Amino acid sequence: MLLLFLLIIGKLRTTLSQLHMKIQWLRSNGLLPILMEMDPEPWLNNHADFQRVFLGGSNSGANIAHNLAMAAGNPEPGLSIELLGIALVHPYFWGSVPVESEAVYPDDKATINRGFVDEIWPFICPSNPDNDDPRVNPMAEAAPSLAGLGCKRVLVCVAENDVMKDRGRLYSEALSRSGWMGVVEIFETLGEGHGFYSRDLESENSEELIQRLAAFYKDK
Image (cartoon, rainbow, N blue to C red; front, side):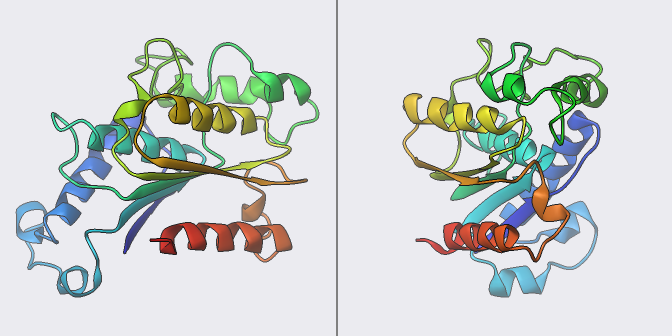
């Protein structure tokens, strides 16, 4: 199994381009002479199973994992790599029209509020600041069909007190309805907010989340 967990925050176009290059390198079994003018990477060739490649990410990393999986499902100009699955932990998906959880948790009660999240996409992608850009709102009217997602399995992890939790739920529901030929699962942590594990990785809920992710990656 080969797992890439994405924790990258930055300008979206540059980040996706850099990750695209790295995944193409992995697909080439570590052909570093092409990309880095070095010898091929023996560890990858000896230990990685390129038939079991997962992408995983938290928050913006989950968004990037989704977008790379969409690229993998599009042979031109997509990624020339077959993904087995993606794990999206508290995914950063958004939109211009509020959904239920964004109204339930007012700005002064949420760990991350709508007013704050509204400003993230325009900062990340100033050339197209619309919060309904398909890259941040995969359920937008102009978004490509999720049926083209280039993997077979998806795990979406949400938190009960996260202002973005319903975006994750809507994503999993839209994926199920899209005609995508795969299996999507959703896992909710009760009593926690966005990114709770980053504040206490050894808490009971953090350990439960880690175990759920491990089970997803190991399941054949």
